Length: 61
Picture 1 (cartoon, rainbow, N blue to C red):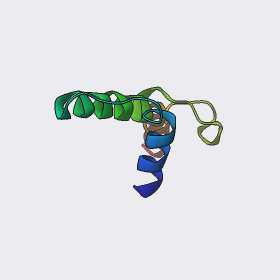
Picture 2: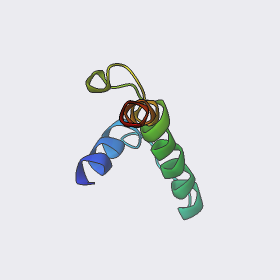
Picture 3: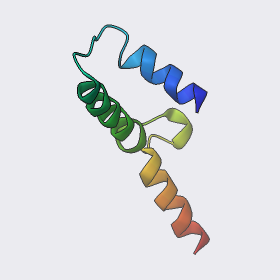
């Protein structure tokens, strides 16, 4: 979890200043959605994490 927050702070929030708590919560929500559903790391064969998980589950069943 610490790695996730570190990555988000560096990649998403380094140069952004939020005006309110609600704005920060919305930006965190968008960043988490990107992290879980859109990023495509090489370690997952270019698939996003959700696709990779679904692919792995299909192999087991």
